[in-house]
Length: 246
Image 1 (cartoon, helix red, strand yellow):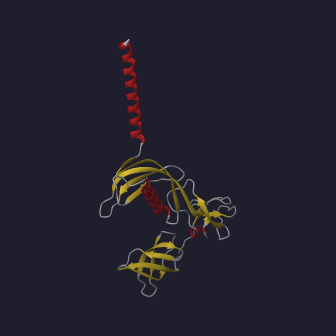
Image 2: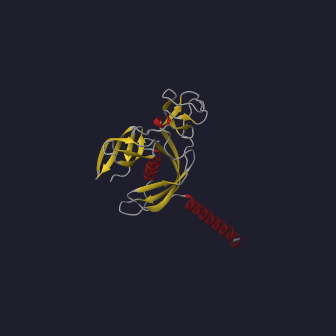
């Protein structure tokens, strides 16, 4: 009887150990790795900064969920960089790096985030036909929770104004750069407000645009008195930032 009773006990113990080992392996494979690492709140802050850097500081970012978080080390500064061509409306993968000042950034982990992003976006106030010029009566700014959208700035109001509809647009839709052919923010001959950094000092003055352009275009501008020309980037309507000062 004693011999007959022992085998089932040994088999039960072996099965229990096998089950526990399997569960432990699964837990180790799926659990986040934190080796003296920054807490998830610091990761969420780094991701928020990364999105605002891409889309604008006025964008409201909420990290709704973090999946597949793997992070080692305890950096004093954490840098998050989204994968190329990332879009909202689905999971976004970020590479996490130690960006401690005085050191070259070093990859220390990764995370997949689900993001809720809200921003003041341009909406159409009425149906607009393709080719129509847009006026202040045709568009308005509405705080909008973005759906599928690339990690880049939304269409600005001054980009939409005076532009033309590139396609038929329904009322109350969010306008994108694909919907509008923007008008130049600066025209050749315009007097523009120019900002320049000279020896670490910010200098502002009036110059004349030699070329037309849209936001972020680089154009030639010149001093009306000396006729000295420089290159400048258009930052807003009638406003430029000098690229290089000699």
